Image (cartoon, rainbow, N blue to C red; front, side):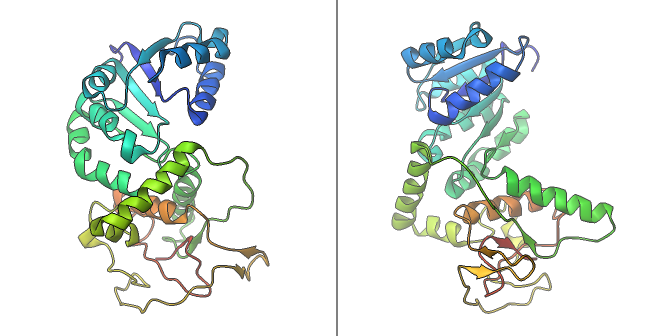
Length: 291
């Protein structure tokens, strides 16, 4: 990897999140990191580089479309890591992921799309393992707090001799910011796919829909790790938490984040707990994970 021309390529640099990421790199990356800004418009890339100031003055600019298979392969072959902020990923992200898998280039993105991650697991993960590429999805607000939060909770429980996890709840008390156009389009594309494709609906409705070892996970609506089948219970969207006295309800991205947590649990050979299933009841909101 040290022989490659570029350390970090930011793809989609001129978008809303891309520009924020570029500014962070310009401030914190350091002069020795070889960075390139990539996207469809040369003019926008040039304007962004000027706006970033001296910290980005020497950065390379790469113009390449999300559908340009050859161009993306060439870019990946020159790069150690590519970070993508281009959504919706199901529409604009597949060729870049495939290029990184083929060229052994590490990849990270901000996706919150179940169907895109499922596609990636099915179509490129085996090739990435062969070439040494690390393909890491959901590296933004979805799903870093939930994914790392559950990991750290599980590690602390293990270190303290408390065993594996029981009911694990992520509570979001405040947040700032809005929805970018790419985020809105991601949700829209998943709705369209679910409307037209029975397989897509089945994946979206499966709590373990991202598991690469689905046959070893619980059957739908198993309420405990004992393997007993439970009837799906009605859940109350908004309720008062008896432990804190606070009112809470389902988190807007819980349907994606819970699946990423379960995927991480499976990829670490179920290190958090034997299995995560969903039980919806008056005391278990959809954003919670229950073993």
